[in-house]
Image 1: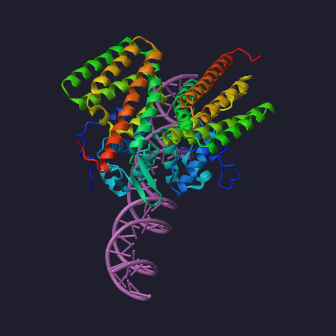
Image 2 (image 1 turned 30 degrees about the horizontal axis):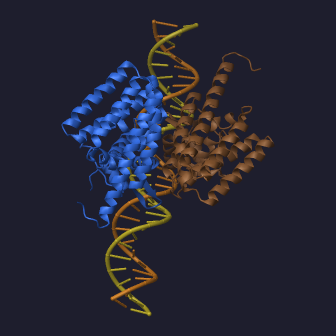
Image 3 (image 1 turned 180 degrees about the vertical axis):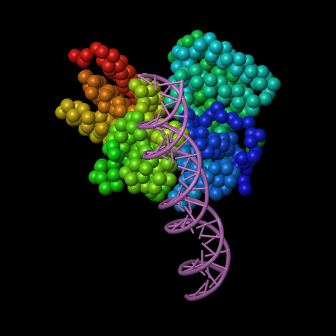
Length: 246
Length: 246
DNA sequence: TCTTTACAGATTGTTAACAATCTTGTACGC
DNA sequence: GCGTACAAGATTGTTAACAATCTGTAAAGA
């Protein structure tokens, strides 16, 4: 029955922060949408895995009509592919597509950084700096997975501070498609230190209320991420084509 | 019964080019989605107008279950707002939001221009230049509405040429939200001439296969559009607050 | 007169059964 | 042995009826 979350398996921390869903139905369907969204985004269901309506009816605990709505929305989010009369499956995003998406994210997020520099309050800035402190500690203790989590939170904070809701929505939508690659870039040797320096620069530019500088810093940061992504993709496919890993 | 299109009123030119829908169901729901999408985007249903499921069942000629799916997708597209147990209405996008959206569009579309400069074939370039010729003629003959249409087509062509499908999807999604403002910027006196010059520069940069220059040209162009949008918005709301039009 | 409550109509949310389509496995003919 | 035709099962698409919720109106009470 696959690894879909059940009604009763609600011990999962619900990791809501990246949901593109706007204020919406308290109705059965909404909860199911969030759950399945989370299941896909967090990799509990695999790319290309089939999503059979009757199974979802059980695992999500919602009627089939609601399941169909949920699948339609997820298709719209780019997380699911549907073919007429042939059902839905989790969409597989390729490495090259991940690269493209990251570049778009860079463009939007640098706009958000610009907005954040204009609108950040002292509290916002303090919060961001606190995150930087956390990140430094996690980096030094070598816990790169948690580092990456706080990293995500910092980006989310910047986006939220910008006050640009459309940007926030789009960034969340794009990020959701990238989970399969989420940890790959930070885990590259030596990348963490650069990453930390880049984030520091972003926060300092925002703290200085310098929009141009903040945008540039964000652009630089994410273009490095994109490059790392592309390079590791290349390495991977080469290895897959016969060249043994060193 | 409002101005929704009927089954039998199919004489409408269907203006498909901007649809964010991916390859999808030939099923009843898909057709209905496209039609309602078009009705909203082309202003045949007004912002804040209620969308009653039973009415749509009739006007779109699809069963109610399909209507509900359609509304969910449109909510996801940001074209419709739904409240639990209270139904759906066409979303009203504010002037300030339109400004925000245009800036995001600028960011993504300049990325697309960059891609277009890299990937454009001679045929692509010829097609773009042909559009420029058309635009010049329409401008000189003063038909600014048709000018604006070709304008849209040129942008779409650039996006398509970039080969970045995610960018194309997002741009279409954003543009769909802006129809209420579509013609406002070109109609501003003197704006058309600048607009034409800017488009020429974009196309020439692409023809020269110079990605940086193309991106910069697109950025410049759309930031002018955004500014015009913001300025006319200000003028309007001032007028609305009591100052009579000259 | 103003506020509150109760009801009726309208509308959305849910459910279950039915129809259409696709997939898979098997038997048959070549 | 190989490919095609057919039938059974699985799955999606459609339909219609029922239940829950909301809106607006009008009567009852202060």
